[in-house]
Image 1: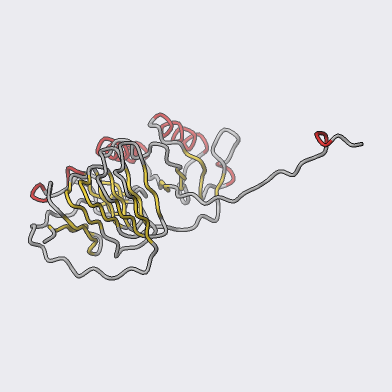
Image 2 (image 1 turned 60 degrees about the vertical axis):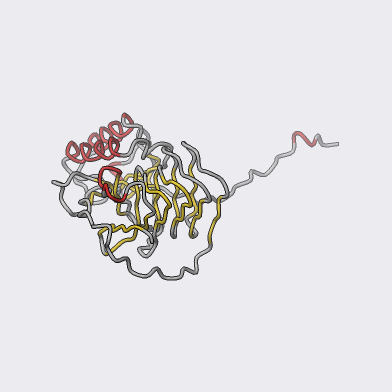
Length: 255
């Protein structure tokens, strides 16, 4: 009689789909890393526990330069899980593996100083902060969304992340500092928004962010970001809606 413990058992393989940040470095790397450091200072924990793909397509670099860049990112707690667009000459056992066939999603725009170029420079890319808008800005009428939604009937505590790329997210409560809401559609917070809120992350430029009390560390729509330092002071602590007009984030009080 065959011992069942010695019979070969099939290995179970499952597919998984994860959201990853795509970083597109630029030469010279020293300047690009300085902008990345600015992002880290302005939004602590932005890269914490996030999978990152390094897109090096078109860069005229050798393997040692790429190895040094990966090392610099690792020192900043940015863990590169794969390389995209890398020539075969750049690949090696001492570097992350090549990645292909990634499904495009919205770029994630990193905040930069006002002196920065208005072009996209980081992928988490750099976008110049939008000009302050008066609180009487007339918001366009929101459009109905056919997307599915998630309702969270509890406060979101520091260190927690709510990620729902399929549609809208509604938080019945507050979002604490250090917490994060990521939605493919709009975000509704029926309480203070103190953490990070990223709406329209799968390319939905019509997504919005609504909150009862704006105290956010960072807000984003379709990849365009503003940090707390960039938010208009007269909007803080008030009920606010936030939307995207072209490549400019705009906000106005509710009511």
